[in-house]
Length: 194
Image (cartoon, rainbow, N blue to C red):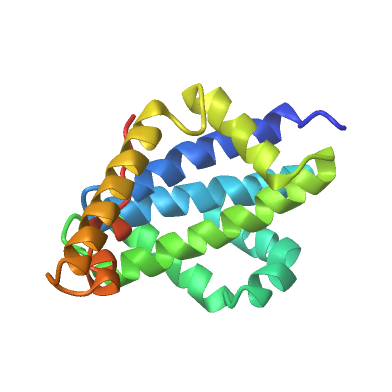
Protein backbone atom coordinates (compact mmCIF):
# COMPACT_ATOMS: atom_id res chain seq x y z
CA UNK A 1 0.00 0.00 0.00
CA UNK A 2 1.37 3.39 -1.08
CA UNK A 3 1.02 6.60 0.93
CA UNK A 4 -1.15 9.29 -0.59
CA UNK A 5 0.77 12.40 -1.69
CA UNK A 6 -0.03 15.23 0.75
CA UNK A 7 -0.88 17.67 -2.07
CA UNK A 8 -3.35 15.19 -3.53
CA UNK A 9 -4.80 14.50 -0.09
CA UNK A 10 -5.18 18.24 0.62
CA UNK A 11 -7.06 18.72 -2.66
CA UNK A 12 -9.27 15.70 -1.91
CA UNK A 13 -10.06 16.98 1.59
CA UNK A 14 -10.91 20.44 0.27
CA UNK A 15 -13.02 18.86 -2.45
CA UNK A 16 -14.89 16.72 0.09
CA UNK A 17 -15.59 19.76 2.26
CA UNK A 18 -16.95 21.66 -0.73
CA UNK A 19 -18.94 18.67 -1.97
CA UNK A 20 -20.60 18.28 1.43
CA UNK A 21 -21.35 22.01 1.45
CA UNK A 22 -22.95 21.67 -2.00
CA UNK A 23 -25.18 18.89 -0.69
CA UNK A 24 -26.51 21.08 2.10
CA UNK A 25 -26.43 24.51 0.43
CA UNK A 26 -29.49 26.69 0.94
CA UNK A 27 -29.66 28.12 -2.57
CA UNK A 28 -28.98 26.87 -6.07
CA UNK A 29 -26.22 29.47 -6.36
CA UNK A 30 -24.36 27.94 -3.44
CA UNK A 31 -24.96 24.39 -4.68
CA UNK A 32 -23.30 25.25 -7.98
CA UNK A 33 -20.54 27.36 -6.42
CA UNK A 34 -19.54 24.67 -3.94
CA UNK A 35 -20.01 21.79 -6.38
CA UNK A 36 -17.74 23.38 -8.98
CA UNK A 37 -15.08 24.23 -6.42
CA UNK A 38 -15.21 20.58 -5.42
CA UNK A 39 -14.70 19.56 -9.06
CA UNK A 40 -11.91 22.10 -9.52
CA UNK A 41 -10.04 20.59 -6.56
CA UNK A 42 -10.63 17.10 -7.95
CA UNK A 43 -9.13 18.26 -11.25
CA UNK A 44 -6.09 19.51 -9.34
CA UNK A 45 -5.84 16.22 -7.44
CA UNK A 46 -5.89 14.09 -10.59
CA UNK A 47 -3.30 16.28 -12.30
CA UNK A 48 -0.99 16.17 -9.28
CA UNK A 49 -1.54 12.41 -9.00
CA UNK A 50 -0.34 12.11 -12.60
CA UNK A 51 2.69 14.33 -11.92
CA UNK A 52 1.32 17.38 -13.71
CA UNK A 53 1.19 20.88 -12.25
CA UNK A 54 -2.39 22.18 -12.23
CA UNK A 55 -2.90 25.57 -13.84
CA UNK A 56 -4.20 28.42 -11.72
CA UNK A 57 -6.41 29.35 -14.70
CA UNK A 58 -9.65 27.40 -14.18
CA UNK A 59 -10.38 27.12 -17.91
CA UNK A 60 -6.92 25.72 -18.64
CA UNK A 61 -7.13 23.36 -15.67
CA UNK A 62 -10.47 22.03 -16.91
CA UNK A 63 -8.98 21.36 -20.36
CA UNK A 64 -5.95 19.59 -18.86
CA UNK A 65 -8.09 17.49 -16.52
CA UNK A 66 -10.52 16.63 -19.32
CA UNK A 67 -7.63 15.12 -21.29
CA UNK A 68 -6.83 12.96 -18.27
CA UNK A 69 -10.41 11.89 -17.49
CA UNK A 70 -12.15 12.04 -20.86
CA UNK A 71 -12.70 8.31 -21.30
CA UNK A 72 -14.08 7.77 -17.81
CA UNK A 73 -16.31 10.86 -17.92
CA UNK A 74 -17.71 9.94 -21.33
CA UNK A 75 -18.45 6.43 -20.05
CA UNK A 76 -20.53 8.10 -17.31
CA UNK A 77 -22.34 10.21 -19.91
CA UNK A 78 -20.60 13.49 -19.06
CA UNK A 79 -19.55 15.67 -21.99
CA UNK A 80 -16.89 18.35 -22.20
CA UNK A 81 -19.63 20.81 -23.16
CA UNK A 82 -21.50 20.07 -19.91
CA UNK A 83 -18.41 20.55 -17.78
CA UNK A 84 -17.56 23.79 -19.58
CA UNK A 85 -21.13 25.06 -19.04
CA UNK A 86 -20.79 24.05 -15.37
CA UNK A 87 -17.60 26.12 -15.09
CA UNK A 88 -19.20 29.03 -16.96
CA UNK A 89 -22.25 29.00 -14.67
CA UNK A 90 -19.98 28.88 -11.61
CA UNK A 91 -17.95 31.75 -13.02
CA UNK A 92 -21.04 33.85 -13.73
CA UNK A 93 -22.55 33.40 -10.25
CA UNK A 94 -19.25 34.36 -8.66
CA UNK A 95 -19.54 37.85 -10.11
CA UNK A 96 -23.28 38.50 -10.19
CA UNK A 97 -25.90 38.20 -7.50
CA UNK A 98 -28.59 38.57 -10.16
CA UNK A 99 -28.22 35.04 -11.52
CA UNK A 100 -30.38 32.36 -9.92
CA UNK A 101 -29.84 28.94 -11.48
CA UNK A 102 -32.77 26.55 -11.69
CA UNK A 103 -33.13 23.68 -9.26
CA UNK A 104 -32.78 21.19 -12.10
CA UNK A 105 -29.48 22.82 -13.15
CA UNK A 106 -28.20 22.68 -9.57
CA UNK A 107 -29.13 19.01 -9.19
CA UNK A 108 -27.66 18.07 -12.59
CA UNK A 109 -24.40 19.89 -11.87
CA UNK A 110 -24.15 18.43 -8.38
CA UNK A 111 -24.53 14.99 -9.97
CA UNK A 112 -21.68 15.77 -12.36
CA UNK A 113 -19.58 16.67 -9.31
CA UNK A 114 -20.56 13.33 -7.75
CA UNK A 115 -19.45 11.47 -10.91
CA UNK A 116 -16.13 13.32 -11.11
CA UNK A 117 -15.60 12.59 -7.43
CA UNK A 118 -16.25 8.88 -7.95
CA UNK A 119 -13.86 8.68 -10.91
CA UNK A 120 -11.02 10.50 -9.14
CA UNK A 121 -11.44 8.56 -5.88
CA UNK A 122 -11.40 5.33 -7.89
CA UNK A 123 -8.12 6.28 -9.51
CA UNK A 124 -6.59 7.42 -6.22
CA UNK A 125 -7.64 4.14 -4.60
CA UNK A 126 -5.98 2.13 -7.37
CA UNK A 127 -2.81 4.21 -7.06
CA UNK A 128 -2.49 3.71 -3.28
CA UNK A 129 -3.65 0.08 -3.23
CA UNK A 130 -6.84 0.66 -1.26
CA UNK A 131 -10.52 0.27 -2.00
CA UNK A 132 -12.56 3.35 -2.87
CA UNK A 133 -14.39 2.88 0.43
CA UNK A 134 -11.12 2.92 2.39
CA UNK A 135 -9.98 6.12 0.65
CA UNK A 136 -13.35 7.82 1.27
CA UNK A 137 -13.43 6.67 4.90
CA UNK A 138 -9.92 8.03 5.45
CA UNK A 139 -10.88 11.40 4.00
CA UNK A 140 -14.05 11.62 6.10
CA UNK A 141 -12.13 10.70 9.26
CA UNK A 142 -9.51 13.38 8.59
CA UNK A 143 -12.15 15.99 7.77
CA UNK A 144 -14.95 15.17 10.20
CA UNK A 145 -13.60 12.62 12.65
CA UNK A 146 -15.83 9.84 11.26
CA UNK A 147 -17.64 9.00 8.06
CA UNK A 148 -20.89 7.90 9.56
CA UNK A 149 -21.78 9.90 12.63
CA UNK A 150 -24.18 9.13 15.44
CA UNK A 151 -26.64 11.41 13.62
CA UNK A 152 -26.62 9.05 10.63
CA UNK A 153 -27.55 6.17 12.93
CA UNK A 154 -30.37 8.17 14.50
CA UNK A 155 -31.72 9.27 11.10
CA UNK A 156 -31.67 5.65 9.91
CA UNK A 157 -33.60 4.55 12.99
CA UNK A 158 -36.26 7.23 12.46
CA UNK A 159 -36.56 6.29 8.78
CA UNK A 160 -36.99 2.60 9.59
CA UNK A 161 -39.56 3.37 12.31
CA UNK A 162 -41.57 5.46 9.84
CA UNK A 163 -41.37 2.74 7.18
CA UNK A 164 -42.66 0.17 9.67
CA UNK A 165 -45.46 2.51 10.80
CA UNK A 166 -46.51 3.19 7.18
CA UNK A 167 -46.50 -0.52 6.36
CA UNK A 168 -48.69 -1.21 9.40
CA UNK A 169 -51.10 1.51 8.28
CA UNK A 170 -51.26 -0.11 4.84
CA UNK A 171 -52.05 -3.48 6.43
CA UNK A 172 -54.88 -1.80 8.35
CA UNK A 173 -56.43 -0.55 5.10
CA UNK A 174 -55.13 3.01 5.19
CA UNK A 175 -53.51 3.18 1.76
CA UNK A 176 -51.30 0.47 0.33
CA UNK A 177 -48.21 -0.86 2.08
CA UNK A 178 -45.94 -0.08 -0.85
CA UNK A 179 -47.63 3.23 -1.71
CA UNK A 180 -47.33 4.47 1.87
CA UNK A 181 -43.67 3.49 2.05
CA UNK A 182 -42.83 5.09 -1.30
CA UNK A 183 -44.51 8.34 -0.26
CA UNK A 184 -42.37 8.59 2.90
CA UNK A 185 -40.48 11.92 2.63
CA UNK A 186 -37.41 10.41 4.28
CA UNK A 187 -36.86 8.41 1.07
CA UNK A 188 -36.11 11.66 -0.74
CA UNK A 189 -34.23 13.71 1.82
CA UNK A 190 -30.58 14.07 2.74
CA UNK A 191 -29.48 15.28 6.13
CA UNK A 192 -26.06 16.75 6.73
CA UNK A 193 -24.97 17.94 10.15
CA UNK A 194 -21.66 19.71 10.68
